[in-house]
Image (cartoon, rainbow, N blue to C red):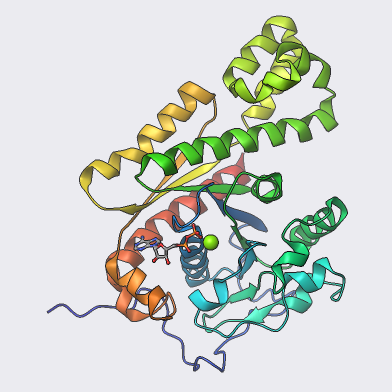
Length: 336
Ligand SMILES: Nc1ncnc2c1ncn2[C@@H]1O[C@H](COP(=O)(O)OP(=O)(O)O)[C@@H](O)[C@H]1O
Ligand SMILES: [Mg+2]
């Protein structure tokens, strides 16, 4: 029998007593590997592994010596603390949204994983599941200011703008899909919803609304693909078309295919990326896959934390590959 190496750093603390706290702000002993980055994990459908990936990717990035804050943005059903094997924190995002806490940093709780802190999701979801516009703007601003190398935002299901806005706020939005038609459909729907929302924000900067609405009547905007919109706008006004093309090139979502079970599933990521370029005109960069692990759902069911050594090497290898490509994308963008 082969001995399994723990996939993630083994911690010295016990479940109730965290081994390490994320370093204080301004700790400059370590070389800075990349600028402050926000990564959001979304995907439209529920139950496909967004939270699992958010937690395990956060652990993987912390393993690479980045100071990571995992933020449970699933305002309807926060559960990241249990995947990390810690008690539900007494403070949560609700405290910030409802102004019981002035700063997000007050809500940081240490985890047993070195360099990884958590901001727990809403305790009383009903109060903030659909935050008011001002509440959301305040939250988005505060997230941008939070002191960390990387923020990993775990988003809820669906394509509501309250979910999509967090995806768009991020430097890197990771779309999760599993090899099932409903998940793939939902992923495209999510991309489309994100694009429409993104277009709205773009309008505030470039006043492109008139021409966009001219080209695609407001009610049919949802039916037109980004690529169609771009070529129609360009035909009307080459200048605005060029602005749109330039901005569209900055909309670069990433893709992870989760719960891969056989070799056919391995081609899904590339196919989705090609289809996204052809059908939507959106560059969807494929970061890689995570296989289906029986031990993983067993760990979740048994309330064992995700860094449990029973998850084994292959899971760690999948995460390391995805994490490596993600950091390569982040660095490439930084150099651009
Ligand atoms: N790669 C995987 N291997 C095995 N089970 C998985 C995997 N990814 C997700 N699961 C199972 O799917 C369930 C739902 O995952 P979760 O991350 O909570 O989904 P979401 O956040 O998208 O709603 C998990 O509890 C786990 O049992
Ligand atoms: Mg979830």
